[in-house]
Image (cartoon, rainbow, N blue to C red; front, side, top):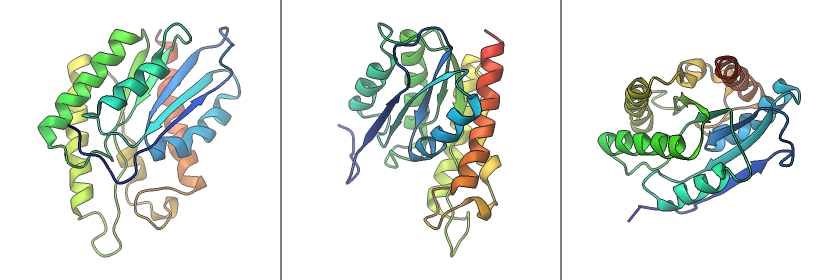
Length: 202
């Protein structure tokens, strides 16, 4: 059974759900994804419809796939691109378990969607006393290596949000995880760049 956090949550954002005329993309991630959702929508300027699933679930939690199945429902939506990130939660997972579960998630998306998939690397974790030399960030670094392996296995592009956000304290708020409006906009610009490339290649 999955090890749960003290608070588990999932947020869905379904934009203009009756519109079938524009490309529709899906952002899957956590609170970082939820924060750059707005800037992503603004940058697309209504040319692309954006859905979001932001969740605290580890990928060993069956509720994660229940929720992912809900947002992927092909009776309602056909996605052109899916931007996938899951790495800051589920801290109990070992690196091998994480890689296996990310592989499972990619296969689940492939089975339930024809969308181009983009793997996003998780953002760095900062601590005031040790900066990036901390246990949480070491876990992120190892998981990002595993995410690259999964992406390579399936020939998927990798959006390196880690490097984009590393050592840029002007982008952060004080909790070590999250970003201010400027930081979220910078991340959104890179997310949109990768999604546009994926859409052009379809």
